[in-house]
Structure formats: structure tokens, C-alpha cells
Length: 319
Image (cartoon, rainbow, N blue to C red; front, top):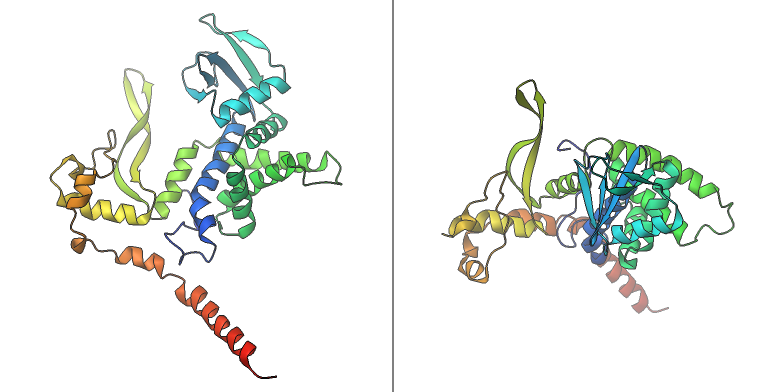
């Protein structure tokens, strides 16, 4: 996951970065995150069997009846509402776990994965839907995997909003099913979850500070356990500026925030008002941040200014 090419087109701070409007830039991370949430939700219904147990206030999803590894979903969340929508559309059979619990057994298929993502889209905030469509159409995200997910979800949004008027009803679902099989198998059946992909994008955008690595999966062989998967852990912030201030401001303070913690227990907390007021900003080098601010000045702003003056002059020339 750390070597993923996700988000090759990085998200930069402020307006001098991408040549797109600030609202789209501000919503870019939220839109990509939502697109991956939708695809991740659909991946649970793509193949094999998913077992669902309804507990108080939550749904618990697992790939096996032992419920050794689970995904817990709040019933009031978007995913929870999407699940309930699926229950109302399809009659999933009940089975019993070895412990005697009654659970739903859902047999996965590409068609069901598409329906699941469609249900999720129905309960998604309209502003996020539009941000996803905006990003898909803008070409801002160049990485093939990220762009594929955005385009897949944008197509589902169009499909659910009834924009494909006049076309046979089976045309778009069939083409979408092919996309679902390709994209979800590559991304979500390969061991990288949505948090991994988001971390890669934020890391490549300069929003994260590396804390350390540790073993996250061990396998018992004989009388010993060996590490089969290591994870890298980061503290990620909502902007590159925040990351720079933390990296250069923390060493100035004599509180626990000086220490970033460990891979097992990262210390990613924000500054208290007192700590922030104690920072000496004269000692903080913001040159990296200013590179983002001025990145496209020559390419974007100067031509616009020149065009403005040309238009102004033309309107004043006597005819």
C-alpha cells in the first residue's frame, strides 16, 4: 500500500496549485474519501459470502461465521442506511453462527455490489455527490486507480439520478458491472483498505509526518509467530501548512507534544491554545508552503491578468 501510485496528482494547499476553483480544491479530499467509502462498501458484496449481525445501534459485517475479523457500522451512518436499504430490496437468508446467533448470509455478485454502491449514493450528501462528479470530469486526479474509482462512482451517481434518459435500462448497469469487477478486485481485494489509500494520497501531498513502522499481522507457524505484514504510521493534517507548523513548532515546546509517540501509540494531537500562543513563528521556515502558493502563478494568474488588460483596452479603443 505504501508503494501505491494513488493520488499521483497531489492535493496542494491554497489556490496556486491546480488551476481549479477553491471550492473544488477544498472538497477534493472529502470527495475522494467518499468515493473510496462507496467502493469499499460495494466490495463487501462483490464475491463470496458476507455475514451480517444486527446488534444494538450497529451492524457487524464479517467474511466468516466466527466473526474473527469484522467491520462495525453505525446504523445511523450512511453505510448503515445503505445496508437497511439493501435489506428492504432483497431477501437475504438467515443462518446460525457456531455460537447460536442468527445472522444474514449475503452471497456476493457484481450486480449486488453495484446495487450496494447505488444504495450508498442515495444517502450521500448532495454536495459530496457533486464534488465527486466535478473531480471525475475535471481531470484533476490523473492517477489511474484514483481516477477509475471517481469515474465509477460518478457513473453510479448519474445512473441513480436518472441522467441516462432514453437509453435501454440494461445498458449502463451492464457496463458499470464490468467496471465494478475490475476496479474493486484490483483495489479492495488486494489488501489495501480505504484508510491505506487515503494515507497514501495525503502523504504524497505533504500533509503527513512519518511516525514509524510496526508489525500489524503475524502468522503462527509451529510454536512461534512470524510477521507477515508491516504497517507505516503517520500523523496526517488537514493542510501542508499545519504539518510544517507541527514539525517545526513542537520542538519549541516543553510539553508532551514534543514527542510524536510511537507507531503503536502515535501522538497526533493538535496544539492547545496556550501551546499555539507560545510558538515563535520567526523560527518556522514556511518556504515549502509558499512553493505551493506560487506554484502556478506564472501559468494561471499572469495570463488571466494579461487577458483582463487586453479586454479592458479593447473596450476603450475608439471605433
